[in-house]
Length: 112
Length: 114
Image (cartoon, rainbow over all chains, first blue to last red; front, side, top):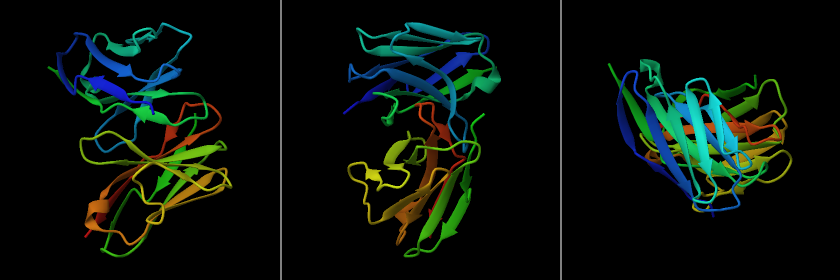
């Protein structure tokens, strides 16, 4: 089955700087890659997603890139702010009817 | 936007008793609902996938007789933890899908078994 690896497990970034979180997946047939943000004790919130027919997607300060050949995808957050502090999960799914497999998460700390 | 309601948000129960958790899609019909378990500082681990009107598909290692899932309608799925034990204490989260893999999560249920 699909396996999603995520790095780093913890990331501390100075406020205003950029943060990058990287994930790899094992099943080349996966074609949907969402990113979720989870604050302590809260539900995961979808922040951005990308499908395999697109190499990059951007939404304001957040961008995701996908390299299908290498089977890795990354989340980029620019101009980080204190409210960006949370746990971020990458995930992968084979198709619209399939389950989503999550990475282990990255705890992002934005330092003042 | 899509809203998923999950109740209760927290529950404390005695060891050996059963607990039922509800997950409702409020403004859309969910063809599929997923149940996850999340231990502190860990990722979401999929427990089972349920489709309306059919039996749930459980992930390897998840006891189907212990974690009973019912998906009787397109807007409601329930998870019952039977004969709960302290090791079942966790954060349980549901998610609902309406035909595309942009799943909407419920607010989660923190279960503590004493």
